[in-house]
Picture: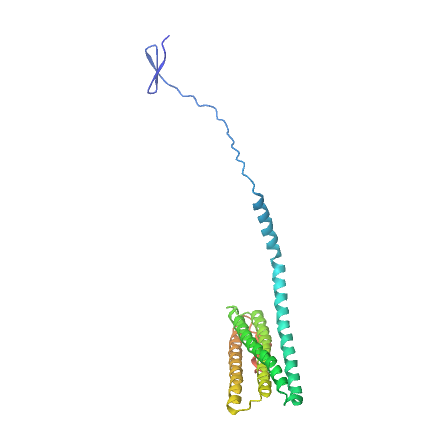
Length: 235
């Protein structure tokens, strides 16, 4: 029996060329399963992220409470400083000739004066921040909310300005320096801070009036009376 040979698609059997026939093989479904390793750290981090996401609202409320507390704390500190200055002025008439008393209490008044200057800068920056964050679409609610913040900030800034003027006056008394040039320099500094306060107030008033006229509902003007009337007595 001759050994079959294959020639380019033909099959040679017994000297006779026969065309090769291909038979379709039955299909066999093949399923491959790949096992992906699970990283426990990834699962833990995913769970933590979900938990943090749920806590965001609570965190924001906590931050607002902290900020409110800090504002109240700053106001309480200014009230305490005001009480100290009042006492200093009251007791001065009993110690006007006591150099040691005047020297010791002068340092305390100087600290209050420096604190008042810091508070002035702080409130000016806060007011600028509120103005910067006002929305481009001037809805009534947004305008009213900003106005309430500005009213509170201007009140606190005015208090800080009053503290600066009061402490400057008490400092002059304790130092006993009544030279005209020195008194003029002290007054000039207070007037400069007062002018800066009134200028910022006027700018905010005009801007709020403009915003109010552009509100979608155009009803905010009725609630802006406190800010649009006039600045309170600064000194």
